[in-house]
Structures are given as C-alpha cells and as structure tokens.
Length: 368
Image 1 (cartoon, rainbow, N blue to C red):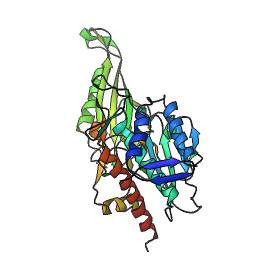
Image 2 (cartoon, rainbow, N blue to C red):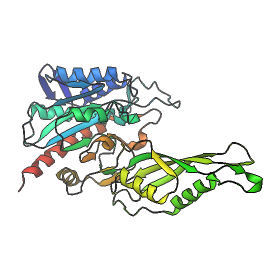
Image 3 (cartoon, helix red, strand yellow):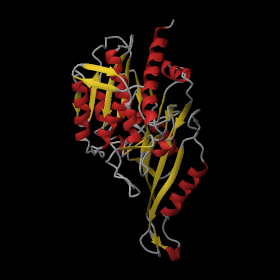
Image 4 (tube, rainbow, N blue to C red):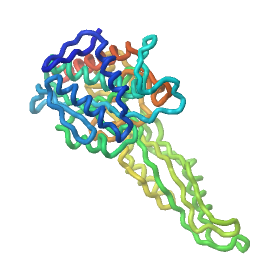
C-alpha cells in the first residue's frame, strides 16, 4: 500500500492514508471554476513542503522535476483542481469529506481530485527515485470544468517543451486514446420579408429548414476508428415576429462533436461548403484529440492489460496541442453526480498504475 508522507525536502512512500488525507483537504477547500485560489495555494504549499519550487500562473500550479535534462522527452502529468457547483440532489455536505464503507465522499473526489492526488504522488515518487531517460512536469490546472481561457489554454505556453501528456480523468484505469472535440456554431439563414397571404418575400425559415434537412442526412467523409462519425445537431431555432409576416431571417444553432479524424476547422469548412446559411463558430479552440496506438505510452498501458477506447467527454486534452493519453482512477459515470465519491482502493491502484505506466514508457524508449 502506498501514500506520501512529506516533510521538508523528504518524501517517503508508506500507505494510502496520506493520499486520503490530501484528497480530503482538497474536498474541504471549495474550488468552483474561476474560484480556485485556495486549492491552488494548497497544492503549491504541498510542493514547497517537498522541497520543490512550484510556479503559479493564475490559479494554475506547475513544477518541473529537478532531475530533468536537456534533450530528453518530457511528459506532462496533468489534472484539474476545479469543480462544478454541487447539484441539489446532495444528501451529504459536498465540502465535508468522509470515508464510509471504503468510499471517500465529497465534491470533486472522483472528478478529478483522485486523479490529481495520484499524479502528484507519482511525480513525487519519481523525484525521490528518478526515472531514467524521461523528464517530468506536474501541472494542476484551473477552469477545466468550463474550458475556461484562464486554465490550460493560459498555462500550456508557460510550460517547458512538452512531448506527450497524461491527463488524469476518471477512466476506471483504462486508456482513452481519443477524445471528441466541440464546436458551437451560430447559423443565419437570410430571406426577404413579405405578407404571408400574398406569397410575397423569401421565407428565411424555409431556407434554414433546407439546410437542417441536408444536415440530417449528411455523413462526414472522415470517420474515427475510436469515435466513429462527426455528429452535428441542430439544437435551437428562432424566426419570425408575427403570424402574417414572412420572416426575413432565421437563426439556428448547431452542436458539433468532432473526432480525431479531422480538426474543427476542417469540419467547419465542409459545413460552410454545403450549407447556404452563414455559419459562425463561437470558437474552434476545443479540438478533438488522439494519440497513435503505436505510441510507446499507449503500448506501455496496453502491456498493463488495459483497454484502449475513445472518450465522448471533454477534458483539458482539447487544449493540449501535443499527443495525450487520458487515464485515471474513478468512474466518469460518477462525475457531476450527487454524493460524488471515489473508492479508497482506487486511489491506491491509481498511483500504482501511473508509476507502472511511466516506468513501462521509459523502458520502451531505450529499447532498440
């Protein structure tokens, strides 16, 4: 059994109790998105107590291993410390951590405090027992739950050169090798107003419906081996002001879930080519992501007996512009649910998994 007992400039692995203690402190410190100042200070303090020199950018905290060497591949160990707001279904105090029947309850315990603590434990493990041939950077990011611009998007340019990332999210320890991206598109179908009784004008509502009907039957040419087809869905439509006036404009909204087979910009270009409405994306920044199956990090995970899959949920992977693997303790199905929890044994296993994954990755880098 593992955990971390930290004193000044000393790190020792003993049992899982300290991981539980750390995560409990994290749960007890409210850290809603854009309000993570206190948990950022907490994480920064833990790293300083371990004799390290963390850096802070907004509410993001990161630190490079003191053993890093120029020219070696660098792995980013990342998870987030912000949470969603607790929903009305909680029967427990979301900020009062409690261990009950092997479960640690509390807001953010599963998503993604458990992953964050296990990654921190892994980073500190390799500070004490250096991993040959690999550089490590640990980063606790803010604003992940809202894909905020003050989170990973602001943090990543501050980091040393990163070659690959492990993103800690609850995956039941399996390997999410691809993740869907997201675009929200505002569409405007133009027309010309007129009196409905005299069949005057050019009905913008009909123009919009023609585009939506095309969209319903269209299949994007690129398909992902892990995530299947790009999914574009009309979700909001609005036109007209009174019953006897042909609308001169119809607006509608598209929710577009992209895959690692094509970028957001490529998908947008296809839609703009075929649809007559004017399409304006609110943002193209939440990109799909993927990592090749032959990548040594994926191969190390497969050698552990883990399964690879494509994830439909967004994470900081969308804002990390290098190959990344999403993996961690906990279950995505528990995220954002009332009375959120993580099993204590998942914390212990999560730390062990990360150590084994990185060890296997390093070994593959030195094999001829």
